[in-house]
Length: 228
Ligand SMILES: Nc1ncnc2c1ncn2[C@@H]1O[C@H](COP(=O)(O)OP(=O)(O)OP(=O)(O)O)[C@@H](O)[C@H]1O
Image 1 (tube, protein in one colour):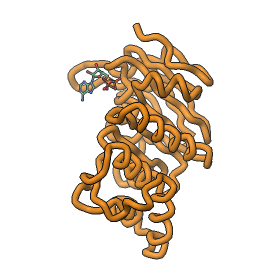
Image 2 (cartoon, rainbow, N blue to C red):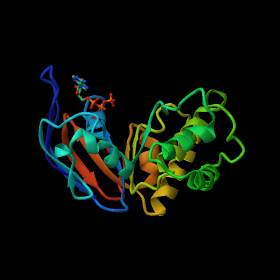
Image 3 (spheres, rainbow, N blue to C red):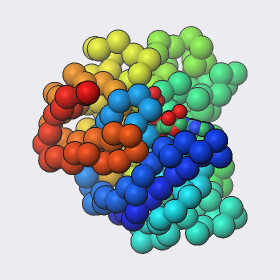
């Protein structure tokens, strides 16, 4: 489903953020990417969503080498993956409903599909009674639920999240993780970049650890491990 083959990223200032990284993520897996600050986690995330380009190596998503994908085809790639960020990135002047509907409008879904899918997904994330509110009227956890609903409303086979609980308290973080787990159980491959040691230790999922741009640990049903 996702395959990295000898991926290296050197930024224009000469910093080697990823150094010959290779690993695979299979269909339906739930994977945490962890590591110290500066270890290359966000760089890896940005490469996967093609926000930046690899200096060397190949990245395959569903068998397609995305490092060779033309800009024209990036929207098609994005339809394969829902994306969630630490800072939610919601449109603040429209409602929760409209934020989620927007993701369907950009892929030209019919209004019938929008009317059917948006309430369904908002109810799944527990926001059925907040659909008319604006993101600024919501708690952090509710904003992240809205962002999650937006990311999955297209039924993407892959969900990528960069520090999805970074701005949330432990209880709310746990609720978001439960939702990610539920989404995963429905068949979506879930990749979560995180610092959140407690969450990683409690979830017992595959953990890939980066250090200085290299994969130094890759364990199934793992824990966060030790930082040094
Ligand atoms: N746009 C950039 N230009 C130059 N260097 C960068 C850029 N982005 C990141 N880096 C460098 O690349 C390395 C890896 O950064 P990255 O953001 O991927 O780490 P991270 O593991 O996500 O860290 P954090 O947990 O603090 O977000 C760091 O040394 C960082 O300073």
